[in-house]
Length: 576
Image (cartoon, rainbow, N blue to C red):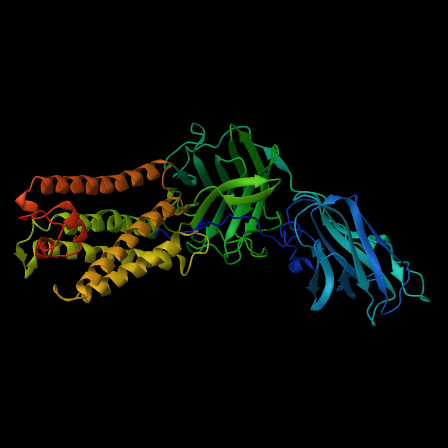
């Protein structure tokens, strides 16, 4: 019942989620209504490749004007009408859709239908809509559109021709009113050699996985270091990745309100980008202004990047004070055209909070958390050990352990103790993922649902056992079959839940070995039952007195806890 997500408490680098047109494939980009600027961390294209045309150049309040957006194939867009004399003002008027399959209306500045965007990320070459002129329309209107061709290729606020009301002064505001976008980025240099770990613990605060690995000698080494230099901190990060490497500083072991930094591979270069996390959403990319001396290196599948930032940045939003203590997350994953995707494994998380500018240390972390390890271990012990042994004892050891122990047959006392232990371990293990997640995990597939079914069946088994009718009660046979059926169902579902849980990233179990180990345990138990069944059958065929009656009889009466019922069954051999 390892109810852990594909993403977990340290899973802070998921699919990129920013206030952008392209990053919302469903077109719900109302957060970008005002600026119309994708925050992709790239420079927008300067020469528009797309065109906005209108059906008429003059309008009166109440008119409906057809607006056509056309050009090379693009994936996303955001179209608005603005006062041509105040392009930074709110959207003007509303739109009416012509094809709702490719375009949708948005509510911007509390005005319903004041913007239009895409409905999916499929390529499109033309969009047509109607613009409805309001009664309070300004004298001149200009349509603006932001077009996204790819994550790294987009145009911001492409203008249309100005349309005007009749009998007004000609529009004379220069085209420069469309605010220019920055075209320069911080300089980036190339690292000439791998990072050195000799100063770890003496001058550098280092995090390494595996512990004490050396990125100069081991390609699989994940390395992060912080070096204090007066008022600034030099950060170095290295690890195997074909997409991105990232780390985040967090006040707790939960994703949300964290200060993150991402090194993203783009073709044969690396973009170094600060970001922040809001709640349990995806990271939002921030301006790169606080980062200095950025550098990177790609070699043999290993990505390395470094940058410098001031320890304190009081005037910069979302950047933490590096003089405080934080949990540190390290993650990597794939990237496509500069856009990061879900991390490839559970992020590495330090065991405790650290001050990276304090006393230099060598620390490690874990890709799986203690609560989830305990959850998996308890479920394994309960449903692969105690319940299996308890079933075997109840099924095959009645004649052997029939002597009384504390008022009941010894086999029954042992069986009851093992089943109570199973229920107790299941209950404890069941609570741990909820404590860890602080609620339900919607990203763990069928595993948590199967776990809940197992928990319900375990509780029902306890209640059923507590109300067991006396031996010769007419309801006893119904009890026996019900008890057996529920127990068997719980065991099968529990094994299925464990197989599914092993693949969840929260446990970080090794490759195929985990599956082979589980198959081995299941095969051992099934094999043991088959061998004992064969043994019992052979004894019954030989008339062995120790088993009282034959296999057919014992199968039909296997759920009873008194051999006397078995000897009265019609299928028992004569004299049994």
